[in-house]
Image (cartoon, rainbow, N blue to C red):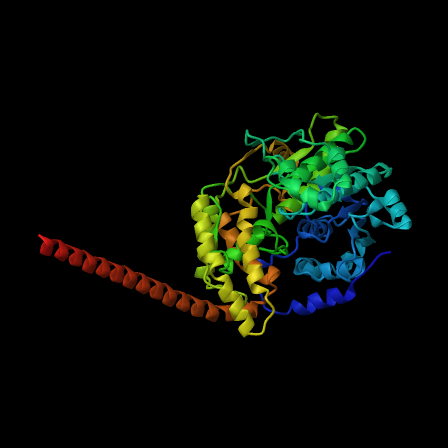
Length: 546
């Protein structure tokens, strides 16, 4: 059944009357009116099946397909019921996201191309009804498997069933599709980051265990025992996310003789660079949560090496790469080339360090006097690569203030939530430490081949090259506003009012700094005076004895 959401379109049009700075909202590209596009032609009359379409990357992909591939026939969107909301309600909520605003304001009926398929990647047969399953088998030409658990601290069992077992089910479904042109599986550039060489090539790597071995272990062992064995199972692999993504690649490799499969490996996916909204994000996960915690003044010390490279890829670049890969894979198979269909999408050729990202963010927040209504304190974070110093600062800056936060919440008769959020965000640096304390050298030959093979119109429409139209300094200006607008769901009015709060917090911070310095000077003076008196007293005693 096709679900249309007219009230969503009406709401977006109404909200469009509010004044917003123009630079954050470039107009949607008129793909139909542009010069001939080979990739657009490839998608004409095709139907695609997207899993994980309600997630951060999945939403950007769906929007990009609708906006830049006007000839696409249908997008079948797998959506699960969640927290009392049906699949249709969740899809409706997704299309009310500001991400789709520019598109729907210009092409309100384009949403009719989206067909919601109720299901769940965690269930047998993806939880899809027989009638919907038949529809997918008959209609789908391209599959984008974007569904995954992206929590780095996810238990092995949950990560395995979502990142590996569900992939096997989707691959089995793909085998029954008679008109399949391409299957794109989204992995991660860090799926094999545990290798000692620190060189991640665009090739398949062996995993320490097969998926059947892990499946047997999980099915024959209780959850508590699996939890206790987790560190032993992982070995040098940083977390269950990286392990299960590596195993997912191995599962896909086994089916390559029968299916046209490509593996897409982006690094750390962050806010959009330009399209359709600058600075857009909807995720509280990973590095995004890290920058949010820094900006809100929550994170005072994090376990990050400021000199190491931040492997960041804007989400709009990811969406463009995902759309272009099926075309490139299809062309390569037609020419019977020897392409290993793995695409590392990284910023090796256009690097930025963690220290630079902090400097850029700090500059834009202070120069624009930005503060959120959720602001805890001024942005001031210490990057530590020394574990001992980090633990010391973590205790001083994060653990010591917790009783005070709890007391404030009780005095205000609020539920004890702030200190939980505070502690969770403070621990985030530990979770991400494997990716913020090390450098890798990523091969990206296939992405470069893809970019080189694209026509000029396609390069304009599907701008996947990291170094193209991207300036890190300007990018973090967009991020500084984007988190407030799209993640914290604040309005431009809220951001304007925040300037007063910015000055208030800044004044309080200066007063606190002065108070701390005064107390420190007094204590040093008091201790010095005490030692001086005791020294004189001891010296006088020695003189009397003599």
